Amino acid sequence: MSQHLTDAPRSAADNAADAGRRDWWRDAVIYQVYPRSFADGNGDGMGDLPGITARLPYLRSLGVDAVWLSPFYASPQADGGYDVADYRAVDPMFGTLTDADDLVRATHALDLRVIVDVVPNHCSDQHEWFKQALREGPGSPIRERFHFRPGKGASGELPPNDWESIFGGPAWTRTVNADGAPGDWYLHLFAPEQPDFNWDHPAVHDEFRSILRFWLDLGIDGFRIDVAHGMVKAAGLPDIGSHEQLKLLGTASMPYFDQDGVHEIYRSWRKILDEYAGDRIAVAEAWTPTVERSALYLRPDELHQAFNFEYLTSGWDAAALRRVIDTSLAAMGSVGAPATWVLSNHDVVRHSTRFADGDQALGLRRARAATLLMLALPGSAYLYQGEELGLPEVTDLPDEVRQDPAFFRNAGQDGTRDGCRVPLPWSGTTAPYGFGPVEGGPSWLPQPDAWAGLSVEAQEGDPASTLEFYREALAVRREHPALGAGSEVTWLAAPSGVLAFRRDSAEGSFVCTANVGGTPVTIPAPGRALLAGAGFTADGANAVIPADTTIWWAI
Image (cartoon, rainbow, N blue to C red; front, side, top):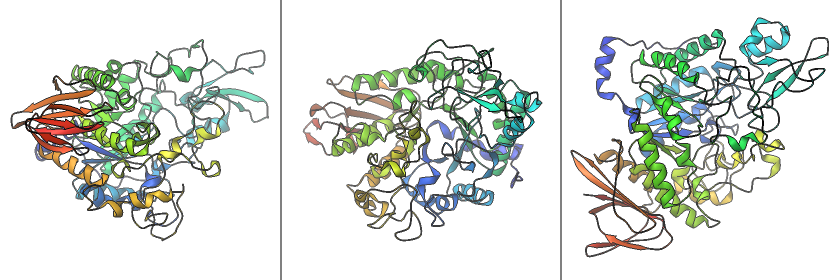
């Protein structure tokens, strides 16, 4: 185990100095870094913490407020690092704990904040607790920190209940006793290499409170909580009574997700976060049946933000988008929390491809329009690395290079996550496009030849590029008083297929018009155009908005 490198308890002086920085997260733009694929600092083809640190000035120039890092903990990498063997150590493929400390300090020196993943629902089967539980066998007290159960059937040959893994197949794996005889089963809602913790056990609570303090002491600004709707299971682990349970996730009540007991855990975590200076936060990855259920995680004594998966999964349709915007703002407003907006992440097909309908140029046009719409909404926005370059999903990776564990399973997820995790292109005309320090060096997933024209170097300074478009949008968002902050929009009359809303502040007003339809529309120009996702024409008092275009207006 590693020791704490810094200490950051809250004092009266800290509180006074921090008064002007509070609630930064309410309108922050947060950039997700998937460490394997962002930047390679040592030339081994794998992204790492020194690589991220070296590229932080790029993120500062982009105009984001914070960086969120996917897991970099010690892990066998059975599920891309979400199978954690040691929550207080950095996996050697990513660097060292000193590298993590350097990254945090460098981030703060650039006036950025850093959020890291924490994975509390499950660990790796190589975690010391689980290895000890297997070693000591039935009756060991440490087994109570997981869900070990005897099987059903005459010889215990059937799983303890009918729960299914998110990755397909039963959510149970049978152990083998020291004498070679079949033993008890253990629960894993994800891969067999990811045993679920038993959050009914006080040692699990104590351990994670300690883990939070470890990283807060190092200086991180918050946590993104993986599977925040998990952890607590219904008493008795009851059967569900149906198969293909994956199709029910996020739409139905499940005995292993979104149980009310999780809220007591988050109340205890919030007390820890509030002890530290700097307005530390926690963000829930919570798949729940309704936005209203998600809002329960954000009551004033619980977490700060929750990912808006309903918005993420909405299609390019004006009515659907308006509905989810309204329900999101209403639900978050009921608990005094900001809404969040996101279009892509490390688990879904990039939105430039999702919106393409087979036409990549159309997909990029819609992606830029969707970005302006998202950034115009009140609350906090999340960007996924590479979307600012207009990167499409890589859909033609050969089977032999694929690494998503879901790809190697016969059921469950479709295993397409590799396509959004291909390493970023930074410079040059041949792979790996500056991803690492060695020209022509390796990258853990191959990059397409077409990415030469999408690199940071190729787009830098080109006013028509997606990169410069993002930079301008984030700069305008930061400067205009009616953007970002606040909690509501005022919808305006608009033609079919067009979303139009107004936002007001004491310093100024703003209108966003998004033509989500397939044909140009003419509307009265609401004011002075600030920024457009594509070109448009003005005819006296009217403006012609092309299809799949969003325009920001100053009033």
